[in-house]
Image (tube, rainbow, N blue to C red; front, side, top):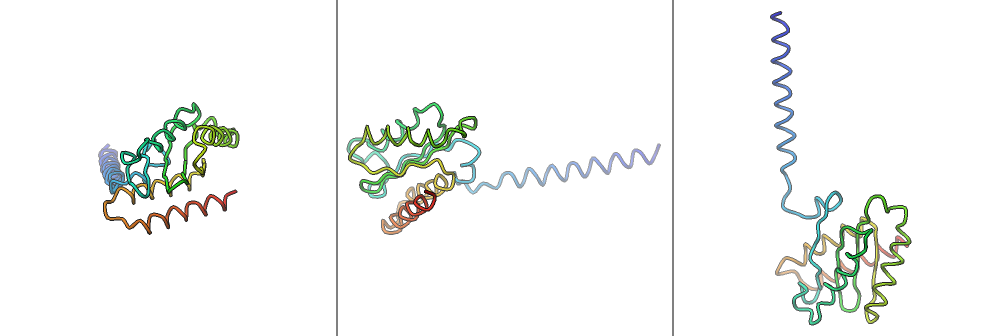
Length: 165
């Protein structure tokens, strides 16, 4: 009888230590959106490399682009980054709609080109493009980011999309 109690106390102690370690590891976030970009909705602000937030965009173009894509039933998270006339639109598709990704991409592209014919769209449902766009968005939120660095990152994302095609 005495040995069973000792075993129970030892198991309980191990359980508490493991629980504390797991809790400590789960709280290390650094405040970055990209850490949770894959598993939950991040809903990042649309950004313009030149003007920053959409407020300075005279017609709210990138907000309208984001709204147009977000209104699709099959999409649950969208990021929009603009550089002159080129606009990166990356999105995440609802899990049960993953079999229709090409059809969704085609529909989104057609809708955007029809609504905003003066712009060139880079549309992607690829997670890597989404994540790199989130990183660019985080970079643009900093106040003293050189425009040259932001444009270089935009170009890298553009090249990455071309590789995937």
